[in-house]
Length: 283
Image 1 (tube, helix red, strand yellow):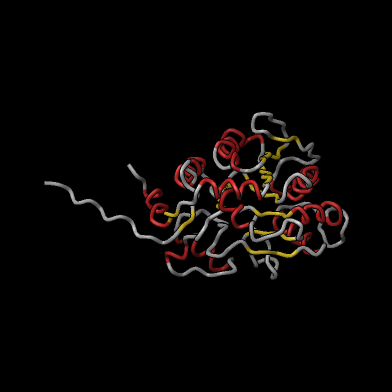
Image 2 (image 1 turned 180 degrees about the vertical axis):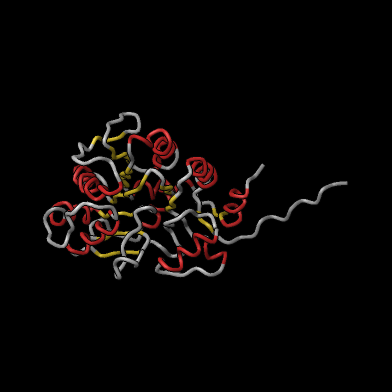
């Protein structure tokens, strides 16, 4: 039986890209995915990320306060408890750890263990950018910083040049880069990036990154209207041309999404095409 969620995606996603093109993009864009998690959600969230989209990154690492060789998860040796109010402190530790891989990868994706990423589509979007340019890419919120700041829930991307600037010139070094501890790490990372000359790039076209679930409901629509850089009014405009990132809280929904958008024969690119007509039942 096909669920309503499957029908929603089947209705808008129908384009197949050859495996050879996927391989070319994968080899051209070396993507390190660093995923924020906590020990308490290792078996309820992180494990599902490992077995779905994370394996499509060039390399993936889970960032935690406990080591786990299976995920794999890195022990950051935090000096504060794992808590939302200490998220910026943890993110500074994460960036310093990821910095050791600065010359091995082109782009660095930050995600949470409740984010769903389509790495193939993200790589395709990144083909338009140079990893040696200081750029920060993601979904543009404007309700805190008028110039735009990334959505941490949907995930964001640092170029190699940006990672180097953040670690060597911004974090704990630049007066405009906050050092006080609180949540809103996505706002803080944007402030620090701006302080050292990084340019913000929106990964939106028709909403390539989603700060909320991809499911269409009134709550998501209302949140889009007052927080989003772009407003969405028509139903079909809620679907993306080439989706790359979603914020998906439910592990079951994350696995179901994965079964639809990353099956072995498809490189998903979404178009608003109609469903096939329902077969007439025979008497």
